[in-house]
Structures are given as structure tokens and as C-alpha cells.
Image (cartoon, rainbow, N blue to C red; front, side):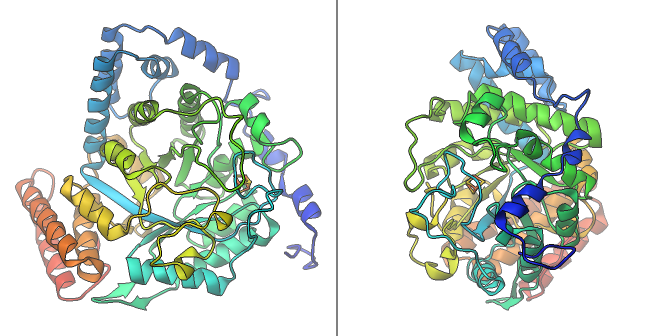
Length: 507
Ligand code: SF4
């Protein structure tokens, strides 16, 4: 890695020393304090215990207004224990998801670019002292090869590209890798395989680095706090490491907003601290983003701790049970109702099936080993020594789409939003108003049809076409209330064009 101003090589130690800019933390503090007050959150959770069914029902009712929930209401919600009342929360979570996002599910794949990392997170297979991991950073050609498999053999249109924290995968490397991925155009069955949205999961960067990602066309920038609980954070992220700086991470998304990236994503790694605390922390994070930028997170992710190569988990005291996991997803759905909610293949198929109606995105055909799409495309194998953690679901995108279609979901490959300037506040306002984005529904039909033509197995194509016919009937029935006559005509023509071989048509 080269120093940006002098062009000379800098050491890892020097790079680490220069990365964190204290002024890019301090400017966001209020009276020297951040927005996570551990004691206040813990007291709020205590006060939330034993809320009456009437209070919980009032909270549920308010959630349909699609506004960020008050901390005291979240605290009451996470403390519900009565199974019947919990069922009411689940029902509302499914309905709110449908109200905001209809029956759409967006799919994506992660692309891991490197296993080098300077940090020592106790729970992570990639921690720097773990000698069992093969250390490797993909070259630009290798990244391109990986993305070609995803775009042309599987048919993904959207990636989350994942980078460890290391000078070999700095902001310049990330920006360059995004440009290489966007440039791919690969001939496939009926059209072109290409990646149309590159989201980035990377370590916190300074504003200067984030501007480079913005210029390279980043979709969403994800930085998960892992745990909002400061004591738990310090226990798993050793002091003196970059990640040991809680505040540098906490304000990563604030810096992204200041760098012009208006789609940002929050998340917590469930299992590091009490899940109720994490839900409160996620809501507090969304509130601070709203307060400062008038805009909350684009998505929320809910990874749970998973086994990793040569990694001891005997210290974990807060494993989240399956029942609690399902319930915390319902709570987040109600508490941050406008945000997309992402579940991943860390979970097993049964779990994913049971929560998908509350969620908006999931990954499919996932490999998390470095270079795994190119090297082991058809094998579905997992090689522990190249992975950050072990996957729970390795099914193909075709299988997953078939399953989702059989559950009544249409899979959307739409990436029109950021290409038409419908990002940040514009899209969040449309979603937050409860007026389900009409563009999203039409684009789901067009992009799903495109995928069916280019990638589906005969079995999946059949069930997929049935879903599209159903969607078309529903859209027709909503003219002119929700869709104008010209929009309907445009949709019909665009679908015909796709069936005739045109691609990348959207509203
Ligand atoms: S969790 Fe991320 S930062 Fe921590 S060791 Fe793993 S790859 Fe590095």
C-alpha cells in the first residue's frame, strides 16, 4: 500500500496509526457524549418489563404509522413473554413488511475479497493471530473472475462485497474493485450477465476514503457495530486494535453520509450481548442518523454468531435461541419499520423460511471462502480455513427462488433506484409514507422476468411465470388508483420486449 501524498510504501503499523481521525469522531458527539448510554438503556429495558397487553397493542397499532419507535416502546416490546401477545407482534411484523415492501424479496450474494485483517475480534475466524486461516487478498483479475461467475452463471445483479481491515484492502482497493465489477458484461442465455449494484461491507473509513467509494458508485455502505454494549464491545475487540475504537466504528455511517453516501446499513452480531440491548442500540443508531441527516438506515442486518475455524466460543454467554431470534426480528420490523431487513445464509433453511415474511432481503448461492465462486462453483463445499464463519444454507439461487415463489414472494432484481437517483431520503420517504413504492413493484416484475428468461431451470421458470401473471393481474386491478394507464401500458410493452430479448428495462 502506498502513501497517498508521497507515493512511498507505508508499513501496516504506520497505516494503522494514521487511519483514525479523532476530529471525525468528535464532531458527532453531543456535549462530548455518544448516543449509546448503556446505563440508560439497561434501565429502560428494566422499566419495559411487564407492560400490559393494552399497552403492547397500542405500540403495535402505532407501528403501522411506519415511524421510528420510541425507546420506551421498544423496551416494552422486547420484554413481551406471553405467547399469544407475541403472536400479535409477529402478525403485525408480517403485515408491516407487506405494507411497506409488498411481497418482494431481494436477493444478493456476498463476495469476500480478502482474509487479511489487522484486528483480533474474539469471535472471528479471520482474526490476525488465527494461524489456521489461509491469508489471501484477491487481485483485481480474481475479483473480476469471481463476479463473472456470480453475474453470468448464477444471475445475481446485486453483490455485497466484503473486505477485511488491512492496508492491502484500503479505500483505493475497494473503489477499484467496484469499478472492475461494474464493468463486467457477459453474454448469457437470453441477454447479458452484469452486476448492477455493488454494496460494500468494509471497515470504518475516514471521509476522504468514503468519498472514493461514493465516486466509484457504491450502493449501500454497511458497517455493523457488532455490539452496542460498550462493556461487551471491549471484551471482544482488544484495546489498541483499530476495531477496539468503539467510537470510530459507531460514527462510520455518519461519516459516510457526510461523504455523500446516503444509503447506509446498520447491524449487530447477535450473541455478543443481551439481544434486547442490541435492538435498543440499533434503534438509537437509527434515531441519531435521523436526527443529524433526516434519514435513517436503508437496511438492518441481524447476523447471529456462528462457528468459525479454530475459534473458541466457550466465553459466549448470550447465545440467542431460535425463538428469541425470530422475535427480535419481529421487534426490529416494528421498531424501524421503513428499513429493509436482511437475513443471511448464516442461518439454516428452516429458520430462513420462518422469518422471511418479516424480511426484505436474503443472500443465495453464497460462498464465503476467498475465491470460492471461481474455485468451487459447483461443489457447494465449505472450506473452513478460507472462511470467516460456517454457512447454514448453501442452496442455489434457483432453488431459493423456487421456494420463495411457492411461498407467494416475487424476487426482485431491481437496482433502478440508485441509477435513477431514488436513493436516500427520496426512497425512504416513499417507503416511510406506507405508499409502497409503485416503481418497485413494476421493476420487480421486469427484473424477475429477465432473470427467469436468462437463468431459471424449467421448474423454476414455470412457477416464476405464474407469480408474474398474478402480479400483472394485481397491477391491472390497481389502475388507475395506484398506477396510471400509461404506466400499465409501458409495463406490458417492457415485458414483451424482455421476452423478445431486450434487457435492463426499468421505471
Ligand atoms: S470481524 Fe472483521 S475486523 Fe474483526 S477480525 Fe474478523 S474480519 Fe477482522
